[in-house]
Image (tube, rainbow, N blue to C red; front, side, top):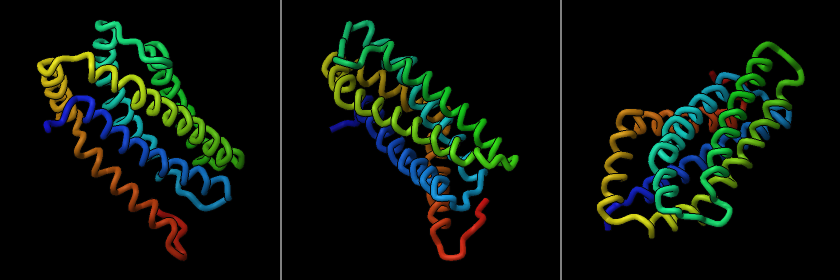
Length: 192
C-alpha cells in the first residue's frame, strides 16, 4: 500500500511527539535544579522551529488546510481557525522560550523555572493539537480527497521536505537525543 499524504503528516507527528518527550525531560531537569546547558535546550528550540513549524505546520497551512476549507470538511473540535490558532500560539511559545533561555544564559536565577514552565505549556499545546488532527482532521481529509489529489499532495510534501532538508533535521534530532542521553551519565555536567 502506497504512503499517503496523511501517512506522511502522521509520521511527522510521531517525530514531534518524541521531540516533546525530550523537551519535557529537559524541563523536568530544570525543575529539579539539574545542570542543563542552555545551548542544548536552544538547539532543541531551533529544531522545533525548523521541523515542527517551518516544515510540518507550513505544509498543513499551505496545502492541507486549503483542502479542508475547499471540501467543507468540519471535524469536530478541529476547525481550521482553531488549528491555525494552535500554530500561532506554538510559535509564540517558542519565542517566549527563547527569551527565557537568553535570561538563563545571562545568569538570571528565575529563568530555569520560566524555561520549564514555557516548555511544558508548549508540550501540552502540541500534544492536544496532534490529538485533534490525528483523531478528527486527518481521517476526514483522507476520506475527502481522491487518489489523484492524494498523489499530488504526497508529491508536494516530498518536494517540500527535500527543499527544507527534512532528512538533515531528523539527523540533527537524533544527535540531540544522544547529547541529552549523555546528561544522564555519571559525572556528566556540561554538554554543549
